Image (cartoon, rainbow, N blue to C red; front, side, top):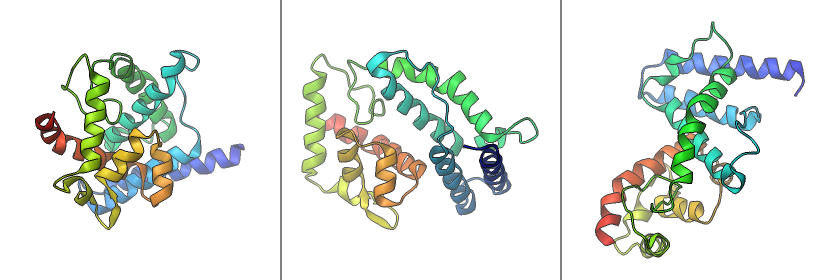
Length: 210
């Protein structure tokens, strides 16, 4: 990326962050600005990769968990207002959060998950067993069977194809959020936030089934 391209990116990100800050929480305008902001950050290729070279085969899982948590944080509550445009660029703020907070927080989530059941690395918690692989397979089968069709009915507004079952199927098949976003032309943050809400909503049903 040339210096001019980097400057253009910084200007674009700052404009989107300030636009989101100007709109009240939970408004369509803020959600649109945040979605565009996160997509631009992701596609820029300027997200840092902290502690690269460590954690061997677990690094990509830790990194993906950290980035997802970071994006969720930026969209949640009024956290975007914590960005101060007078102190630096958006990408600097985002990379600081990723390095100092979200990557370290993701390490124990991934490294210590052997006894947890998870559709998406950590989001179905508190279902522990020494036979976690067997239980994991049972969860997958239950979502696939969907006897009451509750998983396929729960979808992103205006995108019936982007239902919980379809997203879960792609995630446990190893498809990245980036590829799912490209497939359906839906923002990564929208997909991730919807999926997290569904996991929380259906966790009691899954626990009851198990």
